[in-house]
Structures are given as structure tokens and as C-alpha cells.
Length: 124
Length: 108
Image 1 (tube, each protein chain N blue to C red):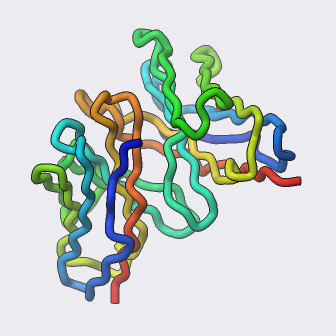
Image 2: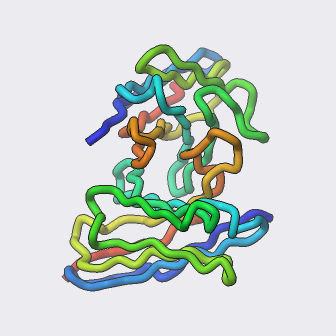
Image 3: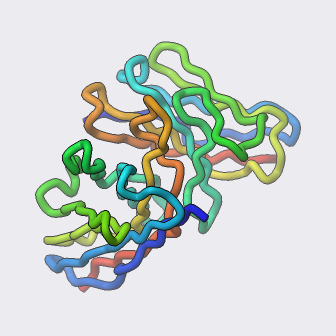
């Protein structure tokens, strides 16, 4: 079964740091680009960033709202992607989803597998 | 920054056709994707590359494009289709992914 399982969410104070993990199973993780998407309570989906595969130099890109504060990485030997979040703000409070880029030629941005999400709360 | 614009809400009666639009300047250049999200659940991809349907998605879901607008059409709407729907694409450079604000589909 193709699956993504996020972990690492929790309560953190403003200015603090948190690292989320996304464990993948059931597919060739090393060949897949991975994205992070977040959703504040009652709000819409917001793209956070992505990391490409090794043949694409593990290239990363980030939304303007998190650039310079968040870092996406991956460990293909562990089939795991990570989201390191620093200098957290109250507006970063959201459910964070890990997603897989759909493996279809030309479909560069579609996300066909989503985790269940992990909740990050930034509050004093 | 690049934006995709969706209507906040659409309402239809069971058996009717629902159309949800999404507008963005880069849509003629970048494919659009559509997601369905039900309360408390993760989103599900229902359309990719403007009009392709993933396996397991009912045939009543279809997508189309015309200029700077893409449309998700749900034919013969069922009560179970009541959900939030999000379009998604990328900016003209292809670097940044963007989601529309979402459309709440209500089945009357």
C-alpha cells in the first residue's frame, strides 16, 4: 500500500523550531519529488515547498511566506522527507501534509498521495 | 505573487451538473490539478493535467480548459460529492506551486 505518514508536530513557542518527518512506503521514494502543504484551521491549502529527486539534484523551492525559515530535506536510505521549521510564527499554525508528486510525464505539480497530516501549533 | 481565483461556493441539487471555475494568468502555460477535500480528511486528487482522471475517480468528474480559466465539472452530482474543491497549478516559471482559495460545493 502506498502511504505517507507524517510525525513531529506539536506545540512550540513563537521563535522556536520544529522538525517534521514524512515516512514513505509502498513506492520508490528515491524517484519521487516530495512536497509539503499546510492548512490553517478553517482555511485553504497553502503550498510550503518541495524537494526533487537525486537525478534533479535534490533541488528545493519554497513559498515566499516560509523562505529563509523552513528547510526541506530527504534521506532516501530511510524513505523519509523532512521539514525543518525555524523562527516559527503564530501564523505558521496549521496541519502540515506531506505529499508525493504524481508520477506522470508532464504532470510536474500534481500530488497524488497525501499523508494524514500532523498539527503544528505556534503559541505562547 | 501569482494567484488562482475560485468562487467561494457553488450549490447544486442532486443529479444536476456542478461547474467550478479557476482563473489564473499562467493557466494557458501550466497544467491545472483539482483536489477534493472532505471535512477532517486529506485532499484527494480528482483531475490532473487539466482533464485527466486518476484511477478510481468516478467518470462524472471531468476537467476542461479555455484560455486563463479551467473548469471542474461534476455531472450527475451525488450527495457524497459535497466537499471543498481546490484547483492547483504553478506560476509561469514553473518554480512555485499555488492553490486556489477553494470552493465549497453544497448539494442541496
